[in-house]
Length: 521
Ligand code: HEM
Image 1 (cartoon, rainbow, N blue to C red):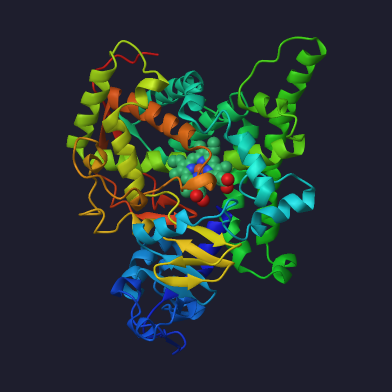
Image 2: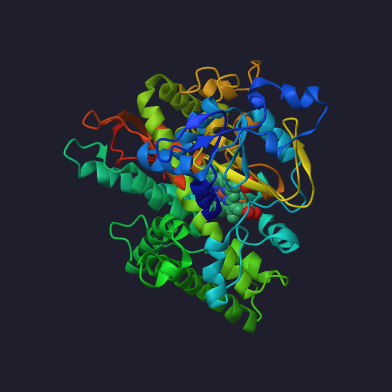
């Protein structure tokens, strides 16, 4: 995610002539029109292969102007749409990253991806690991080493059948979450209001993913979060909140500006907590091995039992899985509940599905929730409207590649503008309207799959996808069966800001009105 963050800061692009009020600089391009306006007629007429030089491009100064003076600093997702309208579907920024902005171009690029896909510079994350001699995880590793690591991490996680085995663990976490919802509602003045739902869903997601990765409960859903767990949560927040400052300030300023020290303190907290839990588990396994007892367990135990993985690799991987899995899942759920609260008719339809497909006197199984078409469509549509990871990157390092009729030499960096793509009007008519029906397989024409790929694509796609989906389906199922979700009339319009992932600009408060269904546990 750090790579996306730093990329989002530096990779902005443009086309045509545009006065930059900051500097009076003029942004120019040599081609005729962007890819949106058809092939570069001039080059084609001359029979010349179009290259990166023919793309619309603009300077870093313009990016700075847009970020600072036009306020796009935390609305980088909206900037994608602005730039697409202004500069076309494929364009280049001053730092030579090429932005692609339509499902077709995205597909062309990703189908040309390499055996060991790269997202680009991850030094923001690797520096700390190098300083402390820690192992790299799936985000930070590259090349063949990454490939081998993913081969190990994918097992017991990536296949729907693998994730189904965590159904029981997740269901227990959902039960605790629902219990907490009842408590919060009761203590509110109206008897049904839950303040700052995103914060509650963060606790849920952290508890859920930790219960799978560490095979232990952290206590995030207890009335008072244990001190160690709270320090860990604060450390994650600290690391993320200083990432941007560290990315944009020069290294020499680290000794007198406070950002680097605070950023590193964040990493220290993350790794020391993860390490403590991993070491505890390792000790338990060792004791059982010493006593010749059978070692049973799930993900962490599986990783330890894998001879190819060193303890250092396990530390690095678990920390990165944890970081990748919490904000993404919790914010997707936050946006889904927000959208449902605004669309009672969709909520009712979803309630009907969950009450019809599973008898109301028992909880659903992992297999059942993953087969519910409307439940799946609701989450898919929420992820289309709010792709929590709104931009991504690829570097095609080993070969030259042709995208959108342009030839790019090897080592070209590409920015994948997922937010603009999933709001592409040609692919998704009324792109700003919540319509889960778009995704139903009921005979209607389905959208281009590359229009919305919130988990990425190919071998470097999200390793936690199936776990995330299962967590989201299971918790949404239970919420929708028990409650009608209503907006808080006291809240102003909820806007979306980009802090590495898409988050709400203010705490989201929602009313959870009892539907009268039994709370089966
Ligand atoms: C709604 C939830 C989630 C979303 C939308 C999401 C999205 C993404 C995206 C877009 C990528 C980049 C893929 C690419 O470059 O092609 C990614 C990578 C990754 N995700 Fe997720 N993710 C989610 C949940 C999770 C969870 C729960 C975990 C951990 C269990 C996880 C672990 C990872 C890891 C480790 C990577 C890096 C993979 C690699 O580089 O090999 N994610 N995710």
